Image 1 (cartoon, rainbow, N blue to C red):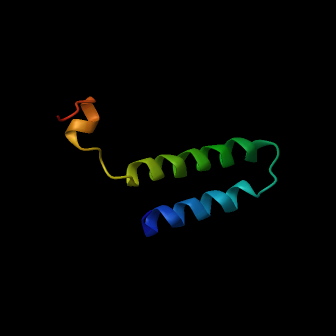
Image 2: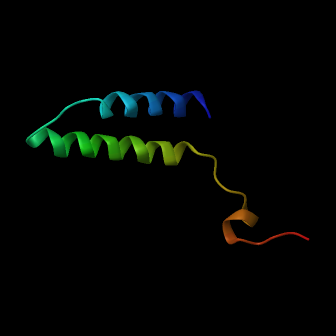
Length: 57
C-alpha cells in the first residue's frame, strides 16, 4: 500500500467517525465516494494478461 493510499484510507476513517444529519449526510456520503474512487485510481493497473483473464502455460 502506497503512502497515498494510506493517507486516503486515514481520511476515510476520520470522515466515517463523524455523526452527520440533514443535508450533511449527502455531502459526507459524496466525499466518501470521491475518496474511495481516488483509492481505486491509485491502485496499479492490472497487467494486460490479468485484465483479459488470459493465463500463461
